[in-house]
Image (cartoon, rainbow, N blue to C red; front, side, top):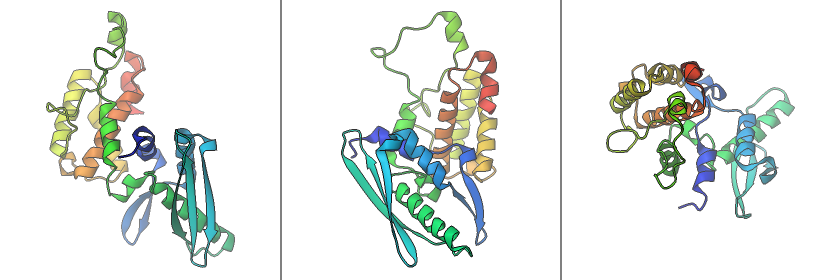
Amino acid sequence: MTMHPDLFAALAAPFEPHEVKVRSQSGRQLHYITARTVMNRLDDVLGPENWWDEYVPGEHSVLCKLTIRLPDGSLLTKADAGGYAGMADSGDDDKSGYSDGFKRAAVKFGVARYLYRDGVPGFVQERTAAAAVPATPAQAEPEPAPAQAAASPVIPRNGNSAGNPPRTGKALFAWTKDQEQRYQVGLLKYLNQWAKLQEFPGRMVDWDGDQVSLAYHEAVRKLQSVQSAPQENYEEALSN
């Protein structure tokens, strides 16, 4: 078990839909992010001064050694190799190998690993779900005045009546409809639009476990992102 679960959960968190690119390869649609998007994630989570990369070029690939500084001051390095794309311009081809190696090394820290359809680490799922649960009474802040309480959207407490995130498309659909009825927001429409960008099956009930997990995390993240929006702008913020 990691000593820094919050840090690695932040590194492995799903990206915004507009940050994920799609390309066709051998008749398949592949999702990916750019090296600059990875750099932004490392900067945001670690700070620009707390990570660096080294490269060892080879004839057919480039080895990237990616090092991060942990909160306790210790260093952690992971490495992976990236292949050259075979571009006509030798300079561009070299860049492709360096970029591929960098992204592959970052995947070992959890960055964008979910795009490989292998799911996300368990502690990432746990912390995303935990973020939706309000503080215990001992930790909770004083309740706002009634007018303020009415103006603040409420984040869903859990995935279902058992206190766990939904595991199937049918359960996710029921959970989403429940949130819509409780908080008067167009969450189902937003999730369907988001899922279309991810090229999920057209019907939510046909989504597999990984897709359900990603969609639930996206729903919670989106609701949290508009938590501070005024009530009259809440629906507009949710649709953006």
